[in-house]
Amino acid sequence: MPSGVRLQKIADRIRDEISDMLIKEISDPRLHNVYVTDVRVDRELAYADVYVSAVEGKSRATEIVQGMESAGGFLRRNLTTRVELRTFPRLRFHWDPTPENADHIEKILAQLREEKK
Image (tube, rainbow, N blue to C red; front, side):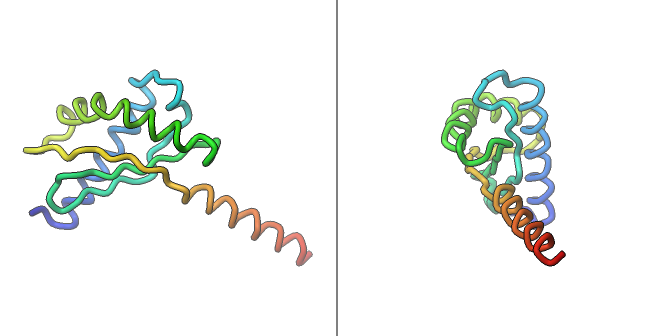
């Protein structure tokens, strides 16, 4: 079983490679302006949970996750050549609401700053 540091390095590498493929190699219109926010790999290297988000926000969440799942085979096949592992984890895609939540909190803080003035 890999150490926690090794798992994090694998997850970071997978995140970087998927991000690169989204920009350069995938032409699916559903995946326009999509970015990978996080990747978590389980200790057995059986699954890699890929968290994605988009500029438009939650309104396109299901469409984006479906697009990522349909591109999943292509992504995994290309990742196996770019990231050297004995067995490559299966990719699972999830919507990440964190950027939207952070934006909402930032707006509230800005509003409070304005009221304080």
